[in-house]
Image (cartoon, rainbow, N blue to C red; front, side, top):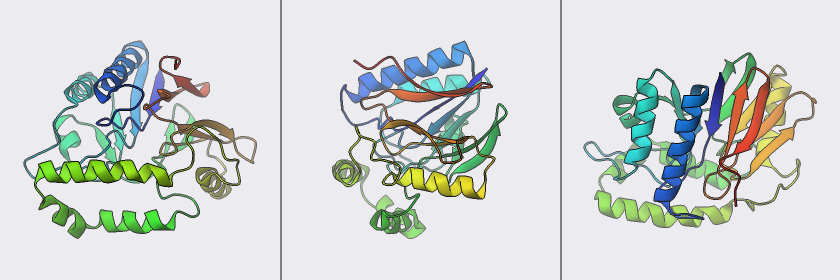
Length: 250
């Protein structure tokens, strides 16, 4: 049996292929993993370019993705969904309608005999103070209440406009900047200093597939990359974790 991790699907925005084609590829990946050997799935944030739940309205689309998640959960395979910076306004829709387990902060857990820390990765590590302040603002109940007063058509267009601009503040997505400049490496080093039993620290957000051995020579920081270009994921079994691609990018 194996456990699968992936993140940063960013459904709703086009990249190397359209959002609909990317959705089909994600569904094919989920289906293949599930029918082969999946014991659980961990989808680690930014599944959508933007998500907001009004009292009686949710964003249109993504029915194939939701249908596959429902099929997997109904078959008894747990699906864990983490909030990211693009979909931090998840409510209870996926929990109630599909039966996934939601996580809104990093999760320390044991899986298949390995010690893991799992999280989206936004706002972790040193620096990025502007975003951290913005995240606290967006997380406030009053800010979500105010946004819910907007008409969904206008609110979605506004969110997609600003979500595209947010990418300019991130590091280059095709280049590892070095251990001294990668915020999630610094965060991982701090965590293993406090908890040296950790085997794997698995994050998304960075948009670059990374498998980096940390300073203790034992623990590894794994970044899940994204599906806009890389179509990357991590497979964990009793032998350990491996960074893979679906299929090999062309």
